[in-house]
Length: 310
Image (cartoon, rainbow, N blue to C red):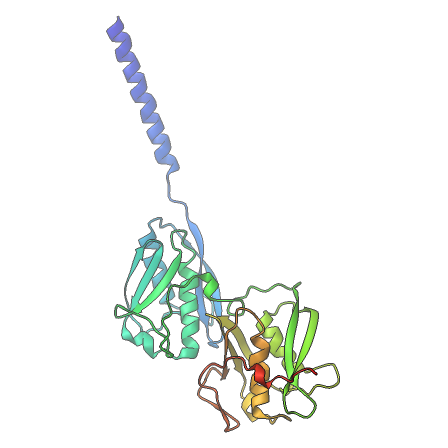
């Protein structure tokens, strides 16, 4: 009788475990994850995103899937592939939370003014994967370096500051320090703005547009013409990229060329995250401002040009 009771208990246990396993199997279906794929805008001056759902749960499969999407145009008109058609992804490796993507040497042929958008789109897309903490680029197995020779290193979402993406606060206010020219055009003069509303602009955009708008106080001379068009302003890796329309090269300022350039550079460099400023015209850095100042390399702040208070 004891043996029969024991045998019955064993059968009940087997049945219960079977039910539990079936239940677990039924609840372990793959749930789709919603991500964003970032594309380079057709204008080449910003990136856009489109929602994307994946049923993949294995990290390497998700990465492979996202890289395939980044190598194709988006569904919306104007959303161009982030990875150019002539660039080959040799492979990738995920280790200790870092995804290292290896490209062929065609990656180095991407123009510097476009490459920052390519890099941002790739990083911002892949960093959404929970297991991924950073992304590194290599070219033919060697660490990727910018034209300046500086290694790019490991990147995450914080490598690409507001201005590149549409993440702005319409209620934002802040204090700003701008630099216009003094009255005789011999030096820059500090101009303070308190509790200024920069609304749907990034801080960088607000500063550049405030310089174009000009000072409201006497004792200052504007350094930029109100006719100048701003194509884009964004910051990445502590460099602020300011892209103007062709009017920037054509207009004649009332002040010296250096005063114009460092009005922009010193004003933007008041933001803690900005260490250098690269000025381009319609996406190109291959310009000489008024046959005087080479714009091919980023500028650093020059406070020696600022008028000293007595």
